[in-house]
Structures are given as structure tokens and as C-alpha cells.
Length: 180
Image (tube, rainbow, N blue to C red; front, side):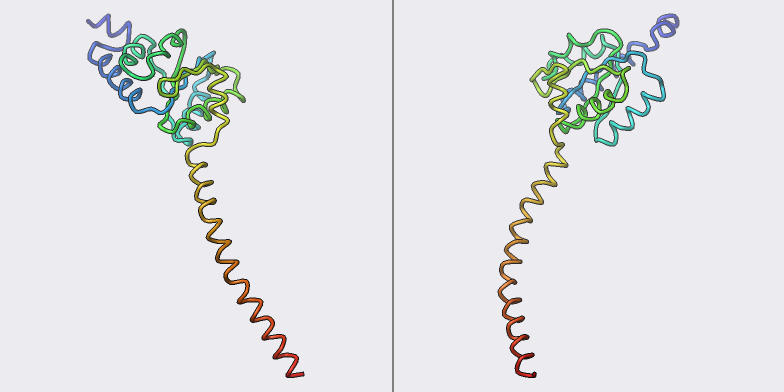
């Protein structure tokens, strides 16, 4: 057993735990982005993980075989074909966050390739992930909606108070005229 653990780095229970953890990720994620590492340095990988965290997403390097096992009976089963070579997974509950962070990072680092991914049961190729990344995130949409909801209230308050302001200016001008 020692040589097996030494050779592969994980024993059977660790592999089962990794599959269970990935299965949980696949069942909770709003989007999964598959990337290919083309010689990314440790510093660049750390930077990418940081950018993912800032966006509300996660980035995980997983053994392809274990990831394929974890995909079974999830909405993301179709991405199994993309898991070849040195891959890693970006995922988030927000359907845009992981895609946006991965695509932004790939623009400045040619050692990270966007392979594709999935949003729920919908498979996406590289162009689909890039299109998804161009959409506003949930937080940006919430901010826009709050602004739209508040805008009419502000306009109503301004319209209601405007006649009173005009009336006050007329009375003030009339009072100044009579005083002179």
C-alpha cells in the first residue's frame, strides 16, 4: 500500500473524499469553467485563485479521472469530455463570476486556456464562456435594479418639492419687492 500512496499521492479514502467534495461542488455550482494549464507558474496560479476568490468563485485543480467520477448524476456530466490533459475547474454559484475571472485572467496570461464549461445542463464552448463572461454579474445586476427602483422615488420627491420651492421663491421675491 505504501508504494501505491507514494506513487499516486492519494489512498482510496482520500480519493473517495475528493470525489464526494467535487460532487458537492457540481451540485451547488451555477457555472463550471474548464481551463487548461499550459505551464502556469505557482505565482500565476496563486494570483488566479485570488482573482477567483475576489469574484466570489473558486478554482481547483482536480485529477481528471476523479472529476469524471464526481460528474456522474449532476447537471455538469457533459463536461467530462473536456477533462483531458492538465485541466483545472473554476466554479461559482453566480453564473457569471467564475467565467469572468477566468477569461479576464486568460487575457493577460497566455498560459491559461479556456476550454469550455457548463451552466447547469447547458454545455458551453470557449466562445460561450467568453460570452458569459461579458454579462454583468449578479451583484452588478442587483445594483442596477436598486438604482432603477430608487430613481423613480427620487424623481417623484423632486417633482413634489419643486412647486413648493418655486412658490417660496415667488413669495421671497414679492417680499423683497415690497420691502424696497
